[in-house]
Length: 78
Image 1 (tube, rainbow, N blue to C red):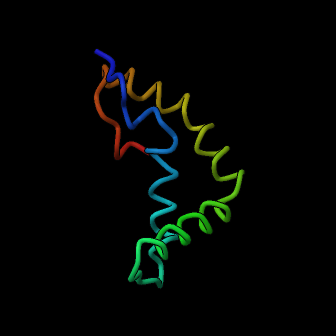
Image 2: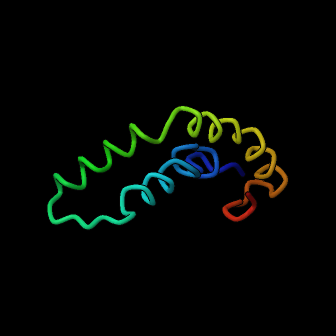
């Protein structure tokens, strides 16, 4: 059975949010929600299109791995 909302199939979930989180919290501490929001926006802009493209290009390989696992989770396969 295929997971309808699998994190394994969404590039934002399997690559981008993690990278963004690392960049946002590296050497920063926030005292307000506004500071956090501004940092997220800044780092999102700095993340770069190539990173997003590479993440999206992994999709077919991820699809194949999930098929091999018969719909199972593949968090630590890549």
